[in-house]
Image 1: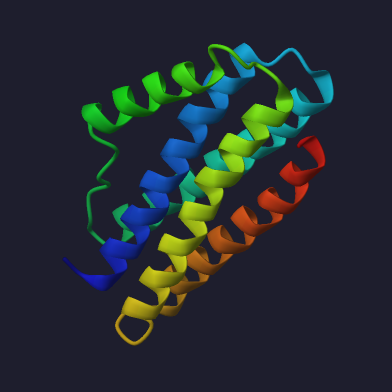
Image 2 (image 1 turned 120 degrees about the vertical axis):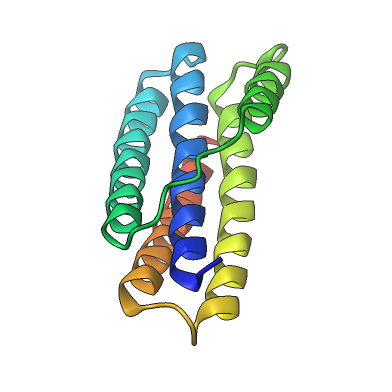
Length: 143
């Protein structure tokens, strides 16, 4: 696969995972300040999702979303992890873990494709990394 398509599809899938997970947590959470934070996060992930799709399509690539197995697995994992603990602290911890994995994967992909991908694709990946890093810092306030 082309380096640009690889990076952009990563952003597309990462943001889709963020949208799906946050929507699910918003239904569970009863903490108003935490829900307000989640709404801002949702808007951010939706924007990355749209931008990645647009850039993929402009370059003649089809977006590759998460497969059904990944969606179902994530849905059940969130339900299992919040079954006995619906606190904002627990949900923030879950999101920190997910964002940290996203940061690691983003940095790896940036190193892998830094010489092969176009500047716009790299810039979007760097913006996603920064978004995830800021999210982790803000989520620490809810622990």
